[in-house]
Length: 227
Image 1 (cartoon, rainbow, N blue to C red):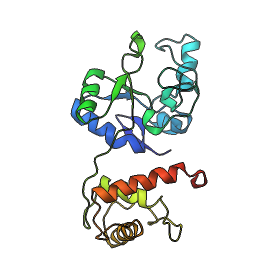
Image 2 (image 1 turned 60 degrees about the horizontal axis):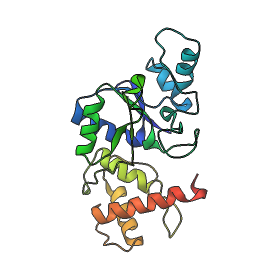
Image 3 (image 1 turned 120 degrees about the vertical axis):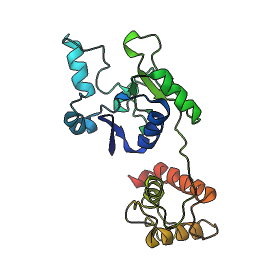
Image 4 (image 1 turned 135 degrees about the vertical axis):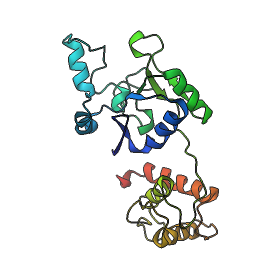
């Protein structure tokens, strides 16, 4: 799992654009997000604590520690607690199901709704957990039309998919890495992807190509041999 740091908190890289968009739309700040074992090195650098440390402080009644779920049973670790999502406590969750603590939950819920995303309060009955929110479904990302010469996060996102999904012809990824610039190598990869998926090979990543990329990405994730 790769992380971005937002408001001094590790956030799963795949969710970073959505969290930034919510911040921009709400003016709210993130107090906590991913507290998994994988995020511990970043948490330490940011002066934050992991779920295991928070639980330890809670069960030993240390000052300032609120009730905390045991490690392996918190959405802050991308693990189900049996309440937030259907399924059993301890079940592995998707990146977008990570728990988020915000300093202005109502503004966050509203900002997410304006973007067509569903974010809800997970524990409405708990006084200690009013700030805890979760996405209820995977946020759909805006897919702008990308052309050769473009650059930035969306190009990197598109190239990132092309660097992972495999060609049905030679069974290799279309790109060696997620380039942030739509240069000749990326254009050639887009054209090849389009050609191999029965699209007009114009090198422009529009709605049809984005949709096919997402389909290819889902198929890749569902393939047990891709891990």
